Image (cartoon, rainbow, N blue to C red; front, side):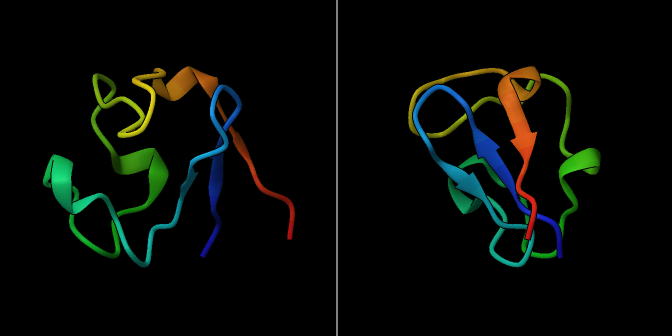
Length: 54
C-alpha cells in the first residue's frame, strides 16, 4: 500500500495501520480519508502530505 508523508513534521500515514485516534480504520486509503482530516502529530492538512516513493 502507498504511504504518505507529512511535509511539516515527518509523520507517515500508513493505510495498513490507519489513524485509530481519528477513527480512520486500518485499510483506509489516503484518498478515502475525509478532506477535513489533519495530521495527528502537528495538525497539518491533507494537502501538506506527499506520496512516499518506495
